[in-house]
Length: 73
Length: 73
Image (cartoon, rainbow over all chains, first blue to last red; front, side, top):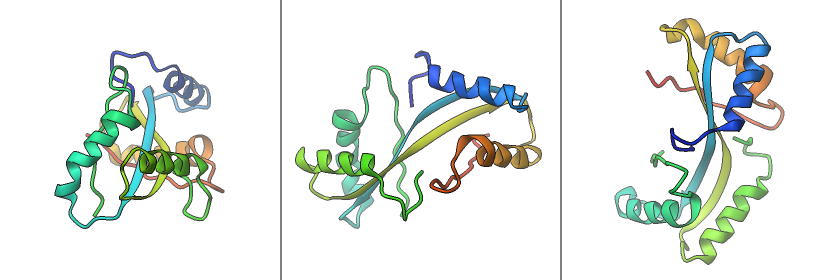
Protein backbone atom coordinates (compact mmCIF):
# COMPACT_ATOMS: atom_id res chain seq x y z
CA UNK A 1 0.00 0.00 0.00
CA UNK A 2 1.31 3.48 -0.85
CA UNK A 3 2.23 5.68 2.13
CA UNK A 4 -0.49 8.18 3.10
CA UNK A 5 1.58 11.14 1.92
CA UNK A 6 2.02 9.68 -1.57
CA UNK A 7 -0.60 10.45 -4.23
CA UNK A 8 -2.46 7.37 -5.47
CA UNK A 9 -3.81 8.12 -8.98
CA UNK A 10 -5.03 4.54 -9.43
CA UNK A 11 -7.08 4.70 -6.23
CA UNK A 12 -8.37 8.11 -7.25
CA UNK A 13 -9.56 6.74 -10.60
CA UNK A 14 -11.39 3.89 -8.85
CA UNK A 15 -13.05 6.44 -6.55
CA UNK A 16 -14.23 8.58 -9.49
CA UNK A 17 -15.57 5.50 -11.32
CA UNK A 18 -17.48 4.31 -8.25
CA UNK A 19 -18.92 7.79 -7.70
CA UNK A 20 -20.04 8.11 -11.31
CA UNK A 21 -21.63 4.63 -11.19
CA UNK A 22 -23.89 5.67 -8.35
CA UNK A 23 -21.83 4.82 -5.27
CA UNK A 24 -21.93 8.41 -4.03
CA UNK A 25 -20.83 7.75 -0.47
CA UNK A 26 -17.33 6.62 -1.41
CA UNK A 27 -15.07 9.28 0.10
CA UNK A 28 -11.65 7.99 -0.86
CA UNK A 29 -10.00 4.87 -2.27
CA UNK A 30 -6.42 3.68 -1.97
CA UNK A 31 -5.13 0.75 -3.94
CA UNK A 32 -2.33 -1.58 -2.96
CA UNK A 33 -1.03 -5.09 -3.45
CA UNK A 34 -1.87 -8.23 -1.56
CA UNK A 35 0.80 -10.94 -1.63
CA UNK A 36 -0.06 -14.35 -0.21
CA UNK A 37 3.05 -16.42 0.53
CA UNK A 38 2.98 -20.13 1.32
CA UNK A 39 6.05 -21.14 3.35
CA UNK A 40 7.69 -24.53 4.01
CA UNK A 41 7.69 -24.02 7.76
CA UNK A 42 5.52 -24.63 10.78
CA UNK A 43 6.60 -21.87 13.17
CA UNK A 44 5.41 -18.39 12.29
CA UNK A 45 7.57 -16.83 15.03
CA UNK A 46 10.75 -18.20 13.50
CA UNK A 47 9.76 -16.87 10.10
CA UNK A 48 8.70 -13.35 11.08
CA UNK A 49 12.23 -11.90 10.69
CA UNK A 50 12.63 -13.70 7.39
CA UNK A 51 9.37 -12.34 6.01
CA UNK A 52 10.23 -8.82 7.19
CA UNK A 53 13.49 -9.12 5.27
CA UNK A 54 11.59 -10.23 2.15
CA UNK A 55 9.30 -7.20 2.45
CA UNK A 56 12.11 -4.71 3.01
CA UNK A 57 14.51 -6.09 0.42
CA UNK A 58 12.28 -7.35 -2.37
CA UNK A 59 8.55 -6.86 -2.11
CA UNK A 60 8.17 -3.18 -1.21
CA UNK A 61 9.81 0.13 -1.93
CA UNK A 62 10.12 1.52 1.57
CA UNK A 63 10.42 5.10 0.31
CA UNK A 64 6.89 5.13 -1.06
CA UNK A 65 5.18 2.06 0.33
CA UNK A 66 4.14 0.67 3.69
CA UNK A 67 3.29 -2.94 4.45
CA UNK A 68 1.58 -5.16 7.00
CA UNK A 69 2.34 -8.81 7.69
CA UNK A 70 -0.45 -11.17 8.71
CA UNK A 71 -0.11 -14.87 9.49
CA UNK A 72 -3.08 -16.90 8.28
CA UNK A 73 -2.39 -20.17 10.17
CA UNK B 1 -7.20 -12.26 -5.63
CA UNK B 2 -7.29 -14.73 -8.55
CA UNK B 3 -9.31 -17.89 -7.96
CA UNK B 4 -7.24 -20.91 -6.94
CA UNK B 5 -7.88 -22.67 -10.26
CA UNK B 6 -6.56 -19.71 -12.28
CA UNK B 7 -2.83 -19.55 -13.06
CA UNK B 8 -1.07 -16.55 -11.49
CA UNK B 9 2.07 -15.81 -13.56
CA UNK B 10 2.79 -12.64 -11.57
CA UNK B 11 2.76 -14.55 -8.28
CA UNK B 12 4.89 -17.26 -9.86
CA UNK B 13 7.48 -14.69 -10.94
CA UNK B 14 7.63 -13.28 -7.40
CA UNK B 15 8.12 -16.82 -6.05
CA UNK B 16 11.01 -17.49 -8.44
CA UNK B 17 12.65 -14.16 -7.60
CA UNK B 18 12.37 -14.81 -3.85
CA UNK B 19 13.78 -18.34 -4.28
CA UNK B 20 16.72 -17.12 -6.34
CA UNK B 21 17.44 -14.36 -3.80
CA UNK B 22 17.92 -16.91 -1.05
CA UNK B 23 14.40 -17.26 0.37
CA UNK B 24 14.35 -20.99 -0.35
CA UNK B 25 11.41 -21.91 1.85
CA UNK B 26 8.86 -19.95 -0.20
CA UNK B 27 6.58 -22.66 -1.59
CA UNK B 28 4.08 -20.59 -3.54
CA UNK B 29 3.03 -16.96 -4.00
CA UNK B 30 -0.27 -15.53 -5.20
CA UNK B 31 -0.69 -11.87 -5.93
CA UNK B 32 -3.88 -9.86 -5.71
CA UNK B 33 -5.20 -6.38 -5.14
CA UNK B 34 -6.00 -4.61 -1.91
CA UNK B 35 -8.56 -1.82 -2.16
CA UNK B 36 -9.14 0.40 0.86
CA UNK B 37 -12.41 2.32 0.63
CA UNK B 38 -13.32 5.20 2.93
CA UNK B 39 -17.10 5.61 3.16
CA UNK B 40 -19.32 8.50 4.28
CA UNK B 41 -21.28 6.35 6.71
CA UNK B 42 -21.20 5.17 10.28
CA UNK B 43 -22.98 1.80 10.13
CA UNK B 44 -21.03 -1.01 8.52
CA UNK B 45 -24.06 -3.34 8.57
CA UNK B 46 -26.06 -0.96 6.42
CA UNK B 47 -23.22 -0.71 3.92
CA UNK B 48 -22.37 -4.39 3.57
CA UNK B 49 -24.86 -4.95 0.71
CA UNK B 50 -23.66 -1.80 -1.01
CA UNK B 51 -20.01 -2.84 -0.83
CA UNK B 52 -20.84 -6.33 -2.09
CA UNK B 53 -22.55 -4.71 -5.07
CA UNK B 54 -19.43 -2.58 -5.71
CA UNK B 55 -17.26 -5.70 -5.64
CA UNK B 56 -19.52 -7.74 -7.92
CA UNK B 57 -20.29 -4.99 -10.42
CA UNK B 58 -17.12 -2.93 -10.59
CA UNK B 59 -14.11 -4.02 -8.59
CA UNK B 60 -13.74 -7.70 -9.44
CA UNK B 61 -14.22 -10.04 -12.38
CA UNK B 62 -16.16 -12.83 -10.72
CA UNK B 63 -15.21 -15.33 -13.42
CA UNK B 64 -11.55 -15.24 -12.49
CA UNK B 65 -11.33 -13.44 -9.16
CA UNK B 66 -12.52 -13.94 -5.60
CA UNK B 67 -12.76 -11.26 -2.92
CA UNK B 68 -13.06 -10.74 0.80
CA UNK B 69 -14.60 -7.73 2.54
CA UNK B 70 -13.19 -6.55 5.86
CA UNK B 71 -14.44 -3.61 7.93
CA UNK B 72 -11.64 -1.73 9.62
CA UNK B 73 -13.69 0.36 12.08
